[in-house]
Length: 116
Image (cartoon, rainbow, N blue to C red):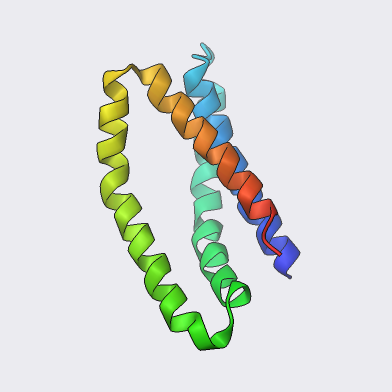
């Protein structure tokens, strides 16, 4: 069961990376972007529950409330600071912004694979 969740999360992250790669490399054909957006919309419906279900498997029961607090806080921090950082990066150009996002998705996919 855990392998299926991890594989699903990695697949969703890689779909996000593929979408950003299409934007970074300025693919002129538009239909793949719509196909990726369709898959991405469906995939996100599965990503959130699967990622939330991983936390109880990663930490001992005694520190689970603390882990939930840290997870929620880091998620809120990313939600607030992410767009601001994106705006700062956009000053350097859209290629820098999307390349940074692509690199972050690839690193996230690799880190999810390492979850045991």
